[in-house]
Length: 163
Image (cartoon, rainbow, N blue to C red; front, side, top):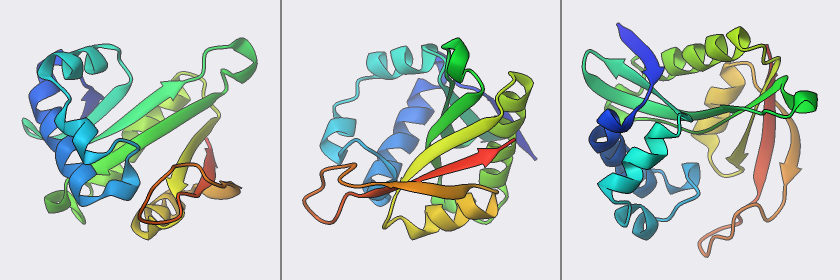
């Protein structure tokens, strides 16, 4: 059984470890480089989490994954929300943790009046694309040269899901 909730400064150590693992093992899923993540201090992690834009999925007390989530605040775009990064540890792949995390974000967004969730994903991140499409996200555009990456084309796809 998984539990979804907002992360706080008290979760900083576990979140930092997962973030570092994610960036190193799945670099196309994150904007930060491994060197940038290695420089994240615990104090900085606590500040990021206390800002309130990160959600986690837990199995018992163990943080299995996390997702950035924010609802846009200006009145004219308050019907929209944005997610990302979205990451679940490899040992939880296939366990339902990612689906539970997405379901938590969707329910939270609906409760706040969000009608459209949006995200961007690297075109070469095929696993994430397949997951998002299974979750009801539909590609609506592309973002050429979205991320500068020495190893490959950094273009991205834009996705949305109507709630």
